Structure formats: structure tokens, C-alpha cells
Image 1: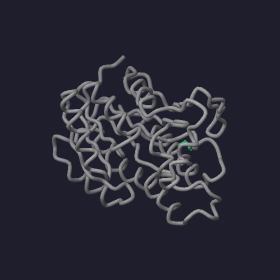
Image 2 (image 1 turned 45 degrees about the vertical axis):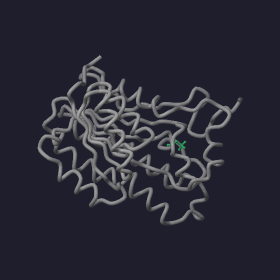
Image 3 (image 1 turned 90 degrees about the vertical axis):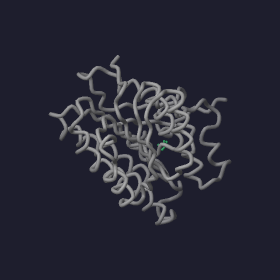
Image 4 (image 1 turned 90 degrees about the horizontal axis):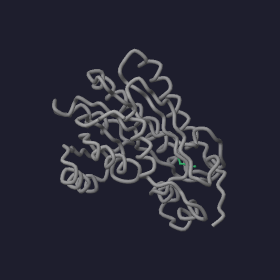
Length: 257
Ligand code: 8X3
């Protein structure tokens, strides 16, 4: 296992769910953090907790990943001491709706593309030049089992996650001669705010997604990302699919409970 203490990580969507869990995992490994999201109060309280518990340096920035200028401004205004980024966690993303594509709100479809694809493009384009100074860099993209499987209601979400995956695969090709590894993480059913957002606050619909089996939690994904990042530098995990114990594919879940 490689020691990652003292490295600097930039996390998109760090206010909750997988992003927050990854922030805690990295802090527990002594990694300094730049936490970004829209909900700045959540980031502020996470910052005080992590600085106190793990004695790491944490910077928070309000970023709206649907707004490319917000992303550009956040990265271009980083002070020198926050510029030497070693780890990029491309986590910000969302699903909106699960209806027929032709019934889905057009704005919802475009919002998924803005955050999951455009936000990812802009952030990664801004960060990679900063990572070129690092001797031990990692780019972790949060794709999904939805990248591998076409499911009803997923026209835009599934395609956006296929985009994330292919984007990561191409970066790995382009960065082959650099000390930057690229990993696509593909989680299955993780019980976070994901489904509450997808179903616009309809708690019952959201809860039904995780009913009758033991779903994954954000900490499980962070745990596996820890595994990926702490491998010796000659080891690069290109892709990791993480399913719940009673899950076989994105949509095949045994609900026996
Ligand atoms: C989330 C997993 O199956 O809801 O990326 O699309 S799924």
C-alpha cells in the first residue's frame, strides 16, 4: 500500500454522498483537500470537521457544475499553495427523471448533460495542466453501471455516463507517458441523495430504489477509491464496477427482503 499523506485533492460535488465520503477517506489518509459544490454551508461544516479530526488543510469553494464560468473561475483563482493538485475526484453529477425520453423535461435532459458532461470537461481541462507538476497523480471519474447498460428512462443519464467512461479511457491514452493514472469507477445502487434528486424529492419513489436488499453506501465507494489510489505507482486500475451483494447489473437486483 502506498502512503498518500501530504497530497492535494480536488473534489467536485463534495457536499454530500460519494463526494463527501471520499473527502473523509482522503482526509483520514492525510490528504489536503479542495472541496467544491453549490452548498457552501455543508462544505464549511465538513471543512471544520476534517481539519479538527485529521489535521489536514481544507479549502472550500462554491461551484455550480452546471455553470462553466463558475468552474473556470474557481480553478483559475486558486492561490499558488493550492495549485499543485495530485488527485482529481470527478464526482459531481446527477440524474433527473426516469420517464420515457420523449416525456422527459427537455431542461432536465440538458441539465444532466451540463453537469455530467460539460462540467466534467471544463473541470478536467482546467485541472490537468496543474497536475502535470505532480509525480503521483490520479484522476478518478465517477461513471456508473448505467454506462454499461441501457435501461428504461435512462436515455440521457446512461449516455452521459457512457461519455464519462469513454472520456476517461481517452485521457488514459493521452496521459500514458505522464505520472497520471486514470480510473473510471462504476457504482451500482448506492443509497445517497441520488434518487431523491432524480425523483425531485419524491421520498417514496426514492426509497423504493433501495428497498428489499442491502444497497451500497457512499462509504463503500470511498473505500474502493481508497484501494485504487493507494496502489503502488506501477499499478493502474482502469475501471472498477462496484455492485451491491444482491445486484447483478444496473437493473437486475434481487429484492428478497
Ligand atoms: C446510479 C446507478 O442504476 O441508478 O448511477 O443508474 S443507476
